[in-house]
Image 1 (cartoon, each protein chain N blue to C red):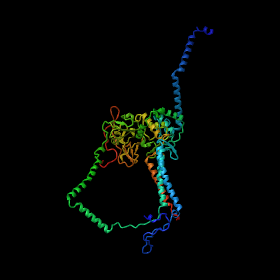
Image 2: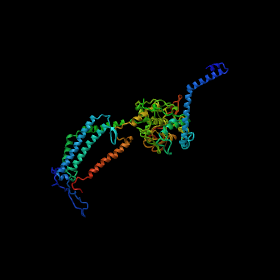
Image 3: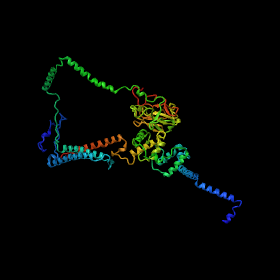
Image 4: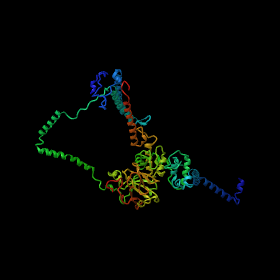
Amino acid sequence: MKKLSARRRHPLAALVVLLLALACTGGLYAAFAPASKAQADETAQSLTIEEGKKLYSVGCASCHGTDGQGTSDGPSLVGVGAAAVDFQVGTGRMPAQQPGAQIPRKKVVYSQAEIDQLAAYIASLGAGPAVPTEEKYGDEGADIAKGGELFRTNCAQCHNFTGKGGALTHGKFAPSLEGVDPKHIYEAMQTGPQNMPSFPDTTLSEQNKKDIIAYLNAVNGDETESPGGLELGGLGPVSEGLFAWIFGLGALIAVAVWVAARTAKAKKS
Amino acid sequence: MSSQDIPEENLPAEQDTTHGAVGVADEKNPFADPGLPPHEHRIQDIDERAAKRSERAVALLFTVSMLATIGFIVSYVAIPVDKSVYVFPLGHISALNFALGLTLGVALFAIGAGAVHWARTLMSDVEVADDRHPIEASPEVRAKVHADFRQGAKESALGRRKLIRNTLLGAMTLVPLSGVMLLRDLGPLPHNKLRHTLWSKGKLLVNMNTNQPLRASDVAVGSLTFAKPEGLEEHDEEFQNEIAKAALMIVRIQPDNIKDKRELEWSHEGIVAYSKICTHVGCPISLYEQQTHHVLCPCHQSTFDLSDGGRVIFGPAGHALPQLRIGVNDEGYLEALGDFEEPVGPAFWERG
């Protein structure tokens, strides 16, 4: 201590103190400043995008181009947004197995973390709809009856009135909505995958989308009951009529033939 | 009839099995009536114990029917309407509906099965043939009817009292006119209603989802929106009649992809408004494929190309889908620039 005290009048002492003070404040600033966190996030974000780009180069670039600009085999992905990627890859449609009239839903090949990385990369190419948060497609605050009206106006023409799907032109079809994650239904409405038109928030509001999803959960969810029993695909009077004609009338004819074929005589001829 | 000829106990003896004239085919008469084959007895005709068994079986079926009806009433009273049960292979179904259907089905089936079993095993099965009698009545009966008619005509004095006869004829002629008048209710004639819709110059396009006027900036490329004319509300009395003609499909196509020149002129920066009513028989069509711009009618598969003036590219539809000419007003809202140029929906006789 005495030694230190002896040197406090040294010509360089002020400089040393100044340096110490500066280092101290700088260190404190570095430790507490919000910028440090933002920087860390940015790094994480750019890391995600970096990882996404790697995945993209391996799995997607052959059709969609090295920078998502699109080729003759696949559309441009600039501006489609994270929601489109989450839908296409999250339902297994992408990567596509083979070109055709329509790319069907199949087994998902990427983990959700990888899908998020891909989505982050595609979103970085151009602004587009983001992946919706759970409160946007949850049942909370949804009007099921209104959702039914909206579904019949906007969706039922292709997807059938309870979302069983239906045929379109030249081998294309509107898929069944049974067992589809509400998040993916929301993303499909937002982005309009393949030949489905999009229903952006400007024409079909967020609340409208929420109502539609609640309606689908009510009529087509896992816990939906079918009081009538045999649904016959829920396709309406066509399948029901066919069933009645074939099996109802068929059973009656079979019984009539059976009754008439057995003789009541004692002596069988 | 012939059952009266049969002894009560259904004994096999003494049954007449020959009916009418039986002949043998020979050269003169190759199609002679061979008559009925000899009658054969059933076990129930011969064995009284078998007959008793059949009787019990029929009675059992009728009893089952009675029990099922009681079951129906009990289910109706006892089963709550919202109760659900699992029944293989139908899955989770309404217990009440299932019980009602099952019991009513059994009740009706058991009556039918009992009746069939009764008729086949116990009722007489002797085949009988009854020759047709001539349709003409005997001369005495005809003479009597004619005499009665003349007598009645004379007593009514219809020939003598001409006033009554003529007024009666008049009344009888006029009465059906009331029915003819009611046919007026099939009208009135549509006049030019089929040629016009609610659209007119300056009417805003209202989004059917939000009930708000559409802005041009709201409509994205590849999106599909349904619109109705401003001022038409769902609770209006004429709503269904009007929307059936005025319903619109709004899609936005990149202007470069629009092949038809007039379509491009009638659009606003690629936003095109087409009638939603199929030109074949008037089904609502909106199965729009955003990549091909084809719109498919679910009823008879008529397909229209919205990038080429609504041209019919497949199916029975007779003419292109009518397009509504649209523009944008000062505030940026989409508005109609007039009515459709041609009648919307299916063709009709005077459409031309």
